[in-house]
Structures are given as structure tokens and as C-alpha cells.
Length: 384
Image 1 (cartoon, rainbow, N blue to C red):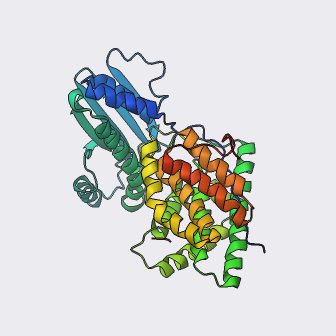
Image 2: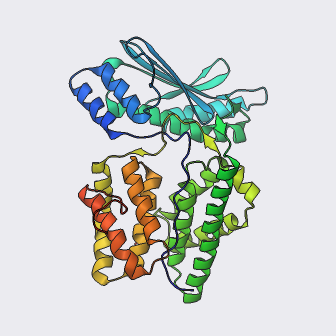
């Protein structure tokens, strides 16, 4: 086997993925600074999901209801207050109420920092209310993200451990037959390429690169926006473990290999049961901007400089590939930032390392300089 850059193909688009337009964030901050607090709140919601208020009359009281997985985010905006509520599980006759309510009390102390979970009419709700005058965009974004993240996280735990029930079935749309075949082909290609590279690195006794190919493979799958359910939960768990510098590196490699072996053994049917389009109010990823991504690129600078200085194209190529995929994993990117990553990863697919390195570097320096361009449109064309 020749040591070429692993292949990448961008995911198909998800129908319900929230889109980010940073211009709304700038308008929100400007409105808040001008003490136009209601306008600041409206623009913050437009930033979170620009489709939510389309066609709505925003001159009077505003009522918004939007699904977030199995939760339902309900927002009320008046001239004086902003109220957000989100029912996410129901109590049933079989529910272990004492254990569940004890767990809720723990969560209300930590990790929740703004919202609280309340029992209302036999269901558990996240709730938070604040005056319009204190609806600073960062605070609004944080409370809405906190509610959405933890509603998504805790519904499965409360159902599995304490026999609660979903408040409502997640609002999902199955993939079309064509989409299913496209997605399955992409997953199959990722799995097959993982097997080849893992065997190659084992033969060469390049054991550390088992980490790289596992991380690349997991990130390619988890970054597909239509991967949900138990599959996404397990993928996210292993992303966290593999990047956790507090865990011994050799142990992370072993755990990554073990998890990839389990993925390789999964059938098409097992994969596809967790793959569908799901309605979402807010992306569960972190807010992004050109400056935020510049800071992230700045954190990578020492490693990039060292690999360039040493002429280590293999380390450089793998480092930039998984770092770019990790950016997509962590941040809710604007389309031009996401496409810049997709374009460069597709362009270097299957290339020799010395050919791919300068192409990847060009995109990296674009993020570092705050001047990101797609490799398709540009005029010229270790571990913790």
C-alpha cells in the first residue's frame, strides 16, 4: 500500500441543520450597545437560526415553538420579558421518581448555570426567564444552547436509567432512498479505508498513527449532520476521549482501535437506524466567527511550525486534516468557512504527502490570517 493522504468526501446536506449568519450577531451586539434590547434579542435568535422568525410579525408579542430532538423549545418575547421553556421527558407510572428527582436536583446545581429543570404537569421542563433589559446576546445564546444541549443529553439518560418517557417523539424525516445509498457508500468507504491504513501502520510499526486514522475516521462520520441517537452519542464519547490529553496516549490508541473494530463490525441496518434528518432549533456546536477561528488556528501554530521546520509532511498532513475536521466538529461554521475545509480535504484526497502539505498549509494560513478562501475559488491555485 502506498502512503497517500486518506480520502474525504463532504457529507450530503441536512434539511434541518440550523444555518449561521454572523452579520446577525454583529447587529445584535450593536443593538444591545445602543440599548435597543428587544432588537438585540430578535437578532440573536436570527443568528441562532435565521429561519425561525421568517414571515413572523415581530412588532408585538412573539411566540416561537421549535423542536430540538425530542425536546420542544418554547419562547415568548414581550416588551418586558423573555421566557424560554423546554419540556423534554414525561413522568410515567413506571418512573423511579425518587432517584430521578434526586438526579434533577444534582443537575440544577451542576452543570446547569442559568436554566433550571422544573416538574410541571407530570413532565420535566427546562425554564428560564429574564427581563428584556438584560438580554445580552452572549447570555441569550448561552441559555438557549444550555437548554438545548442538556435536553438532548439527559432525555436518553432519564429514560434508560429511571424509566421516564419522551415528552414527544423527535421530529425526524427519513433520508430518501438516494440519500441512504449515498450516506451508506460514504460510511462504507470510511470503514474500508480505516482497515487498510490501520493494517498498513501496524505492518510499518507506526503505532502512533493508529490514533490519527481512528480520529479521522470517527470525525468524518460524526460530522455527518444526519447522524443521531446512540451512534452519535458513542462517536462523541470517543472524540472526547481521543483528544483528552489527561489520558495516557497509548491507552487512547487502544481504546480508539477497539471502538473502530466495533464500528467495522456494524451492519448497514445498525448504522442506518440512527441516520435521519432531525428538526433542530439551535446547533449544539459552539458559536464561531472569523476571530474565533483565528484564535483556534493560533493554538495550532506551534505544531504546524515544528512539522514545517522538520520537513515532516506526514505529521503535517495528518495534523491539519484532523484539526480541520475537529473545527467542523466543535464550531457552528458559516458556509464559506465550512466549504473552505471541505474543498481542501477533497482536493488533497489520495495525493502524495509532499503534494498535499502545501495545499493544506495554504488553507491553514487563511484561517490564521482571517482571510479564508475556498481552494476552488482562490486565484492561485502532537497530540495533546
